[in-house]
Image (cartoon, rainbow, N blue to C red; front, side, top):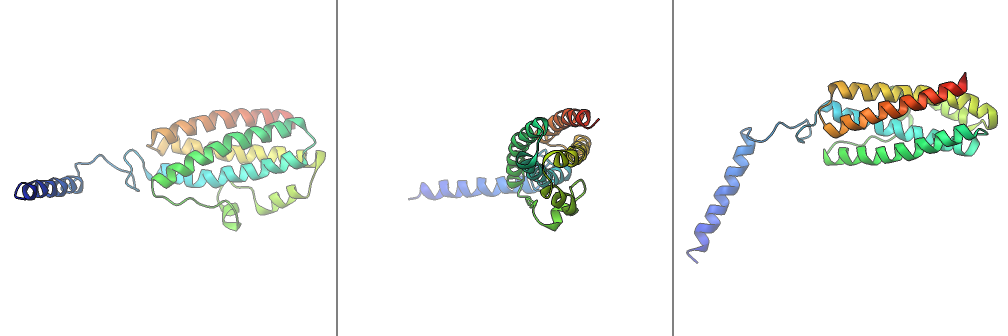
Length: 186
């Protein structure tokens, strides 16, 4: 019994000292949510890009149902696949950072900078065939441009290496998609 008490006391002392070293600044620099190597720009990027991507997916799903163009349907399929995976990744980061995951649905999502308005989505829902395609192409190109702008911002201001790598992919992939869409509009 006497041996157990000193060992328990030693364990308590180690535990208390470990807590003190973190409190005194011995831990690596952490972002606003306590994650090393993450700052507010990284969190804001994911919080805004998740609903932005969810809206891209919503509008791409409309194209799958309403478009007459094989190009528009193929582009929509690529957007759905890529952006669904990116939403999962960013949602996971936000959860690991104990940061809020903002919803895409509702009026608030449409008010965020870079989003398609409620009226534009309603207009798309009422179109089909060539008229849908003529409206969808420039609308999606502009939406993707806004995503590129958001990604470039986090490349400058962010710290999280994985966020910056994703932002580089978004810039590259969405710029290519914008170029392809623009070529179809001309």
